[in-house]
Length: 248
Image (cartoon, rainbow, N blue to C red; front, side, top):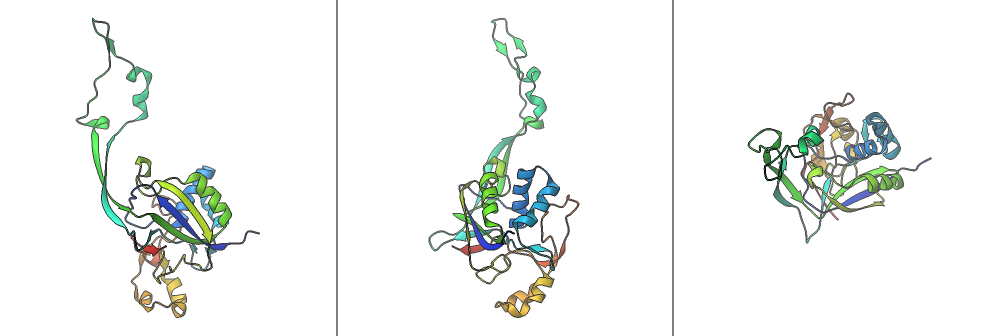
């Protein structure tokens, strides 16, 4: 039987990272890793139960949201990320489209003209709000050895538009720690979207009294976090801050 232990997962960033409106949660990240491993969305979600400890009573995994790892020497730098993209479709790569279309009288081959004023070949300047910090950090309780192997193999980028160079990961490290910081972090702040039912049940044990007065709203609290999935659901919960700092 696998023993689930508290851990800290740290990614060293090699480039700026862009985020969506809500924070990235570790169970969501690992569900993507599991999908890459299994090739099946349903198997990926089932696989999470073998990787992370699940709180059956409140319906959440022991998995924190992303936090930026900062130090006295280096904090978070906010910046805009730009890149130029040109939309292409696979149909445009057929031989009859990319081969020369005609030959001039001088014997030179000519290719078809590319229209960049509009359509799928129009050049687009994209702009995204991005952040840079030396590290991003997750906390959880789970099968450390197996998570280490899967993340090392399948996770090389993180965040929005990762396929265009954002959120590149130079290296990662995971280690066992003594305390579970997946719900409430080391600074006494909410570390993930937490159901109000969990906060109410643990009110007496929390050192930060201000957490008891936080407003709730309908939020997803477990993978899958994408709205189109048939297993997507929300519950009355307190939202974690999208830009959260943890001193490392």
